[in-house]
Length: 108
Length: 115
Image (cartoon, rainbow over the protein chains, first blue to last red):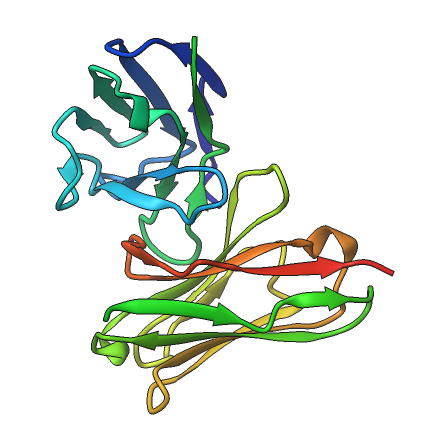
């Protein structure tokens, strides 16, 4: 099965900062990578699909990049609402889909 | 209104069984892959299983494929997860989710396995 490794596990940042989260796949997943945001007590929210496609309504300060095995989520100009935990997920193909372990973005 | 609503969670003893349901509305149910994802307290997301719109394709995470069974009823616009031989480490919030990847999620239902 494909393993997903996110880094860092925790990230301390200030409002206005540019932050980058990395996700690595154990084998190529082409562009079949999604990014989710989750706040405490809430269901995850899909931010980006197919590695770079921003979902409708998601602010443009969120950017996804990468293909193959290396992917990044960048938040340009961190806002108070962005402090949350972020997960990558591969959905390359059958048989299984896998989440990364998550990156908590906290206030410095 | 487009929504997913899970139910069926609760307190269960180790070794017991449970059937979770996910009632949906507001979209063409049979057009979508549906998944179950869980989150143990204070832990990350764990994808469990998905099912295709026609139920022809079903896959499971290795960790649950023996004890978990996903199914759907397209006439009732509902998704199900049957869990047997429940263990303490199955304690989690269980979410149903729509799509590939999951663009729509339910609010989750809490399953607590404890004696």
